[in-house]
Amino acid sequence: MANFPNWSYNYIPTPGEWVFWFASKQDDLKLGQATISMLRNGLGTSSTLNVAKGTFTLTPNAASTIVPVPLVTPTSFFAGPPTPLTQHAANDTASSSYIIGNGQFLVSHANNARLDRTFSYFIFI
Image 1 (cartoon, helix red, strand yellow):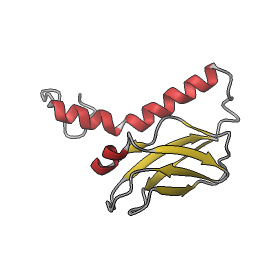
Image 2 (image 1 turned 30 degrees about the vertical axis):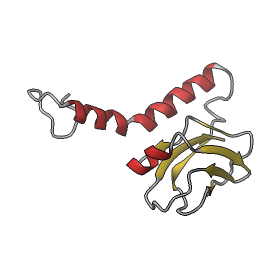
Image 3 (image 1 turned 90 degrees about the horizontal axis):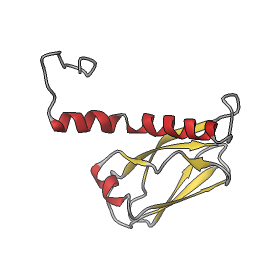
Image 4 (image 1 turned 90 degrees about the vertical axis):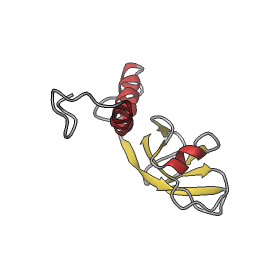
């Protein structure tokens, strides 16, 4: 517990603080789990494993968003579903789908005017 910012050995974090701390580590955990799985299954080696990562925001008043990602191809794949970074993004997670193409991926999503539907992603190239 002492490793968390502003926590001392005598402090017991609230459930909300634990949830926030674990949520902030979710992308790192997904990447590590996917990397280990790939190496175990022979889908890459440490010298050939390339990852694209970043964030994107869904286009308001549209049903799809194109996210440019250099070097991805249709054989690339997500380490896990993109992680919502905002509450509105979390609300749209279940209704979104993703297709990877050459140099980009397409996100099909709910059409609304919200401006803050932001996600992070990891893609194995």
